[in-house]
Length: 165
Image 1 (cartoon, helix red, strand yellow):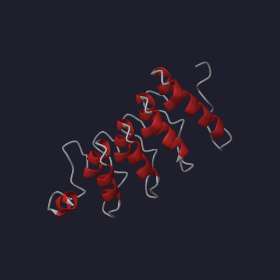
Image 2: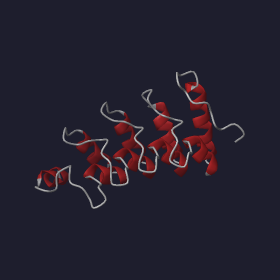
Image 3: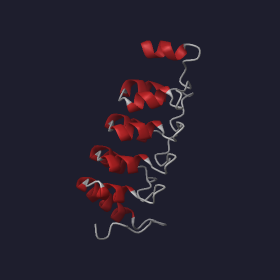
């Protein structure tokens, strides 16, 4: 495969970075290249939690672009944190809710491993639910409200801030 040959070249390996700090995994995830993402994630020298200069992870890139298959690949990893926030305090879930990628929100909620922070606030103080409300993504609002209700019995769960929406 051409990608494997490129990754073996000096200076082009999986740790190579763009001027913005993106790795080959970031680029493949953002552009929807599931086979390349799968190849890269199978390597021990690839960090699925790596960040760009803006703090975006490859998972964040896939989520923001609406690449459901790639999101599933990440969620099935053991050495991966879905709650890493970027430099603006935004998680992949908050960005997917903001952008209206309902299929990504569904996958994140259905495949969550019990560690999804559905009430995480970004630097402006907004939760994924509040972002979905703000941008009129009614289907996502319903999903997130249901998830909050389901998680409300968890220790330390934050009460819903969606009353009145």
